[in-house]
Image (tube, rainbow, N blue to C red; front, side, top):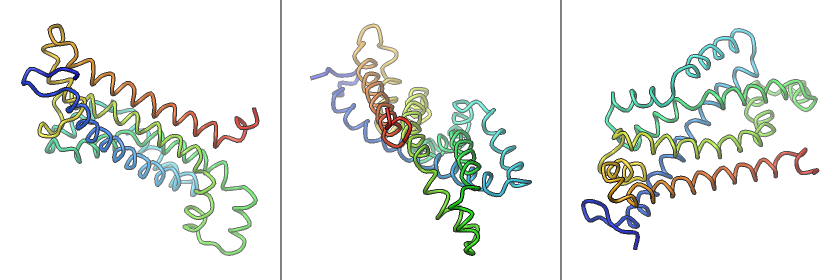
Amino acid sequence: MLGTDQLGRDILAGIINGGRATLAVGGAAAFLTCAIGIVVGALAGFHAGWVDGTLARVTEFFQVLPPLLFAMVFVALFSPTLVTVAFAIGIVSWPNVARLTRAEFLRLKNQEFVLASRASGAFDRTLIWGVILPNALPPLVIAATLNIATAILFEAGLSFLGLSDPNVMSWGLIIGDGRDQIFTAWWIVTLPGVAIFVTVLAISLIGDGLNDALNPKLRER
């Protein structure tokens, strides 16, 4: 229906099957990104002092590294599997989530409901994970949604460069395999590219919708 590639493989079947791998890597990478970012940001924002300073330096170190280049080096050093790709994307993408989480914790930790919980004898771990974090979730949920879109683009870029599992079909791998035929068989590259564009756009719109739904200032408009 959408043509075939240079090996006679159906492009539509490749897009459908490749979407599973691409979305799986994007979701796993976004989960890892949020997990690392929330833990680091929560500890930095709640404890302040030397803990905040140390974690801030670690965050800045990862933030100044070129994310795509660092992910390429990481995947090249280890076996290029989907797990490795998801892990590589996750460990280079967490600083923005950490900074957002830290800002939310700094804003919330001196609120009255937190002080009341502290006065009632709540432990620090209860204050962090049971009191402050649930109230800091709305912007973090939006960030997690947008991180999925970013991870999909990362995975497509790594697959295009041949730094992914060659035995697992993905949208980036289809584009990479067909780049030599871009002028004679344009659909091999264009159609998976359209799939990536539509998916990333849809996820970004979902993030905007969540922002409108969870942001009380926007709901009042």
